Image: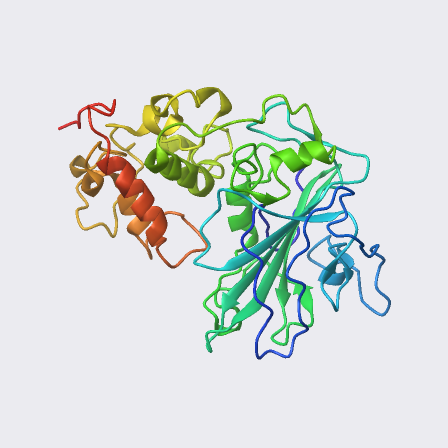
Length: 381
């Protein structure tokens, strides 16, 4: 059974943010390094339920109403992480309209993540992930927007979003299913409950931002090597995975893995884009070469399925399109969807209003380099 609280969450993270400016909020620790004791710093503050704070769940949820009560901070006012909470930044990241993010994880003491299947980690009950968003306000300064929480229980995953007050001194759980389309006038969207479930159901154990590739070279904080060093992972024999190809190919494949494959475009039964037949997740047993990956096998010279959407495209004729046409990004539906906004066919599908120009360029350069001399098939008619 999957238990659902208001809001949503996902794993992963970005660079530590600047302290808030002009909001009256407290200065924030830039982010501790992971220490061998797993504390996240030379010293840490044990979490205790705060006095004078309502830690009950709202009527429409099961997680605490106030972020202070979740165990993220040992000292909330100073934003000092609680003992056992670790910060990390994955090597491959999901586009979030340029928001700056910090991400944190807590594995219960004495428990370990099961990594026997490097494509599908299994987390012990009590595991918690948090993701903090900072976005630009009307004055151009970064400000706290929301912190998402994902918690595993014996009955399933609980998830919610805590919305920060304008003075950044309090974060209260969103208390309905409707999300927040324009938080504090910043343009940032807090997703709805259904939108969160839509994305996370594409992962076997619900967490999107953690796997052997995302925690590999380029990751910071809790990397796959650090997991082993801290004794937080069980069966690490298959974690040393590498994305195949040259720099252009690795960049494109990694981008599609994080932004398309782990959440939607894979063959898991509940993956939202399973019925498209275009799979973009990097699987451990398919990393021997670029042509072995799902992206190449299911995308190159393949016509989109009948359920493909063309509204908003310059050329809506289905005969014009292939999922990926070697050498021809202009007729590759994958690129057209990346560049689309405001229509159902846009990719990523939810929680983004801005095109990720760097992501588009990564995929375009890959497709442009698909020559027969490089081992790719000739473009279909």
